Length: 242
Ligand SMILES: *C/C=C(C)/C=C/C=C(C)/C=C/C1=C(C)CCCC1(C)C
Image (cartoon, rainbow, N blue to C red):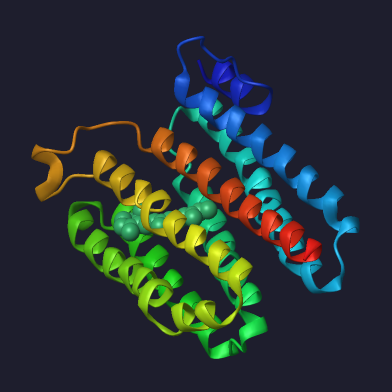
């Protein structure tokens, strides 16, 4: 028994054809790797002004690819949510997504304080989310609520705050890209709290069906990280043309 367990933990674990969660970890890993290669290999075509933004797109998917490589293994070995790796990934990549907002708004004079404000909100959002999901699971609804408030602070900032004002002053290409990124945050990021409510217990449990939290998170990550990167990539291509 112990031997079989060690065997599966130390070598490639067997995957059942019905393991759809494992499937999303594998495809998620592959998609993040492919996206990173795409962004990195495109860097040469951009001048200095846009290169940093596209580089950050590639770093976001690359950091995710490395975490997916571990999460995929962890799931295969234990059939359990790799919550720890998940949050380590998010605490690195979500601030990098805030950095993308800041970088494209710099042409309109974005200050570093905007960047730090958004990073602050995202750290609160993720630390409290982790507390509810992994530490104080019997208070998941409370911590999820605190996390949700921080999430809405980000949404407010990009739709109505300083970031929104800067976007209007940054020219039509940046404004168009900013608007799409806003949609990613409002709709694409909303999948995460939904997944959280599917995987934890709280007042919402009577109407949110129980489901696998990892499937929701894996789909959301692929949409948001690769999608975000592609918006930045297209903005760079477009701005370089005109
Ligand atoms: C690449 C990873 C991204 C964009 C992760 C985003 C994560 C969130 C927007 C998570 C939000 C949560 C809430 C709003 C409430 C419940 C707890 C969280 C952490 C799942």
